[in-house]
Image 1 (tube, rainbow, N blue to C red):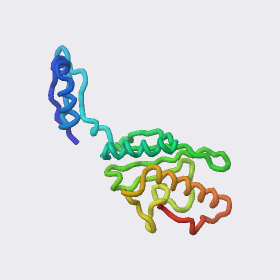
Image 2 (tube, helix red, strand yellow):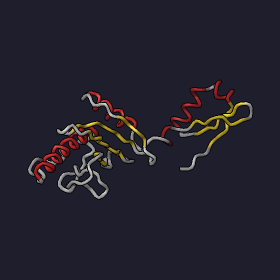
Image 3 (tube, rainbow, N blue to C red):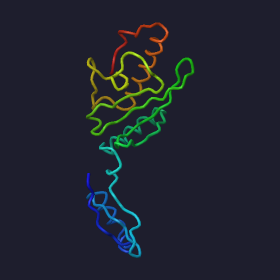
Image 4 (spheres, one colour):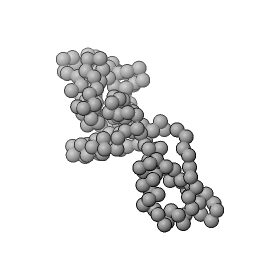
Length: 177
């Protein structure tokens, strides 16, 4: 997305900081800040860097996770998607990192879910994502959250451990709720 920048002197920024920030935040304007005739910095809307997800939805997701004593690590990917990472230990004490990737348009687009160190297993998509929202039970943006997706990931990992021990994937245990 191309951005049109206006030049703004440091003096002008100092004299009207609130007004300038409101123009950036509310109107999507962008500025290159000049001091002594040299271009020093820029002001751009956060949407340039953050994913196309409503900030209130992101805040609600964090509150729900923290209320359940989950402490995600987060990253913005190169494609500006929000990535949540959680630690998980298997029964044999193997550490697994669960990754929940929120695509642009979330929650109307289903998150993608990965578990590091899981190389081969059934019930995965072609890209290696865990199959927790699929043909039988779909993603419901009004019902499902990062927390419910994390719960399903942990359930998937329990099934994975059973499959590793027995060679059979548990059946009749329910899908995405």
